[in-house]
Length: 422
Image (tube, rainbow, N blue to C red):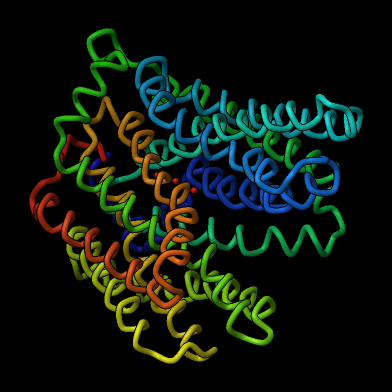
C-alpha cells in the first residue's frame, strides 16, 4: 500500500481509523498508558510507605524500569525482525499483564518481608523490558499497515493520546482512591490482557504476523553494523538524547526552583505540569499545519531552534508565574514539533526488513530522560539556579547542530511501503 485511496482523501487524516488494527492500536496506546499511570507515578510513595529503606534506594528501585527499557529496546527490535513482530508484540502485552498481576500478588502477600523490595525491583525491571517489547512494535505495526502519506498524522495522533493518558491517569487514580493500592495493579494487568487478546485476534492472519525469511534475518551483530553505518540515524539519536536531556528538566529540576523561589511553589509546579499536558494537546493542530508545510528535517530544526531560543532568553526574563507559564507553553510547542516528527524520520530511514530494529534502537533517546535529572542537578549545585536554563538552551542548540549536519533534505530511504517511544 503506497498511495492514498480516494475514500481516504475524502475522510482526511482520520480515514485511517477505518482500519480495525489501527483503531485498536491507537485505543491501546491511550488506555494502556492510562492504566499504567494509575500506579506507576505513585510507586515512590507506595514503596516509601512499605519499605524501610533510604530515599535513594527507593529511587533506584523505581528507576529500574527505565534501565530495563533501555537494555531491551534494541534487542526487542532485532527479535521483531528475526522471529516476527507479532510474537514480540504479544510477548510484551502478555508479559506486561503478568507482571502487573504479580505486582498485586507481591504487594498483597509479601509486603513487609525481606523479599518484598527485591521482588518489586525485579518486577519493575521486567515491566521496563516488556514495555520495550510492546511500544516500539506498535509504531512498526501502524507503519506497515498505512500508506506513507498518512503515517505522519497518525504518529502525531499517537503522541497526543500518550500525553493525554499521562495527564489523566495520575489524577484519575488519586480521585478513584486506587493509587498506591493493589487495585491499580489488577486493573492494569487485566487491561493489558484484554488488549493482548485483541491484538492476537486481529493479527492472526495478517502479514504482520509472519517472520522474516532466512535471507532477511540479521544477527544482533549484523544489525549493529547496519545501524552503526547509518550516519543519519546515529545523528538523529544523538540529537534526541540531547533534546530529552534538556527537556526533562521541566519535569524534574524545575520543581526545585519553583518550590524554592515561589511562596506556593509546590502547588504551582503541579499547575505547570497540567499546562504542559494541555498545551501538547491544544497545540497539535498548529504543529500539524506547520509539519505539512515543512519537510521533516526543517520541522525538527524549527522545534530545536524554538526550544533553544526560549530557554536562553528565559535566563534574562523575570522568574515569575507568567514567565514560567509562557516558557512551558513554548517548550511544549517545540516538543510537539520534534518528538512525533522523529518517529516519521525513523520510519523513512528504516529498510522494510529492519523497521523493528530501527524503532527499537530509537528508544536509546531515553538515555537523556534517565541522565537528565542527575546532570541538571549537578548544574544547579555547581553554577547556580538560573544557569539551568542556559544548560537547556545549549543542549537544544547542540541538538539543532547535530540535525543540521547529519539529516539531509533527501536522506530518506524509501523502500516502497517502508517507513516510536517514553
